[in-house]
Amino acid sequence: MRTTLGSAMRWLLVPVSFAFMAVAQANLVTNGSFELGSHQPNLFSTLGVGNTYMTGWTVMSGTVDWVKAPQFDASLGVNSVDLNGNTSSPSGSIEQTISSGLTAGHLYVVTFDMSGNPNGSLLSDPVRSLELSVGGVSQSFTFDTSTVSGGISATNMGYITQSFIFNAPGTGTTLTFLSQDHTIYSAVIDNVTLELVPEPSAMVLLGFGALGIVSRRRARAV
Image (cartoon, rainbow, N blue to C red; front, side):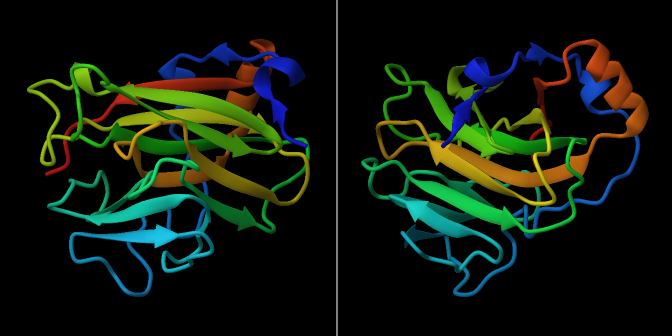
């Protein structure tokens, strides 16, 4: 049974300096930039439930679009994922099972770059939303397309880096991204990582409540 963050444990907004302390860690996510896979899209491919074209990822509900630039600029490489494909009900979702590599009781951080489909009725519906589930907890994230400097477009996606720190319940976990948008114009994600929080950072974070989320604006991909 999924436990929401609010009911299970307290969380806080962590300053960027805590969440991004400069210690290199191994990324436990396979194909976090969605560059690898079979049947690569020309501009985009709509993938349905059970599809595994994207190496390491499975479509779990609805449909998603596997997108290649210049359809949308990616934040890393050329591919990204729009979490609602040609349907919005049920919502699209992708999942990756990480079977090993975690240590129970240690803190890990998931980061991903987030934008939103730049099409649709941006004036009346500018916000794109998703839910991230990992380590038995879930957290919602939003991206406001109206805040992108110069106006959001396929070549100016205005990605922000979102981060979420969780306490590993065991040696493995499942990472799920679920659209929370009610149209086909949904949240876009790229550059997903899952890494151990460096020990000095973990000690600081524990003093502030142990769990947190952060976001920061990325420069536009060139």
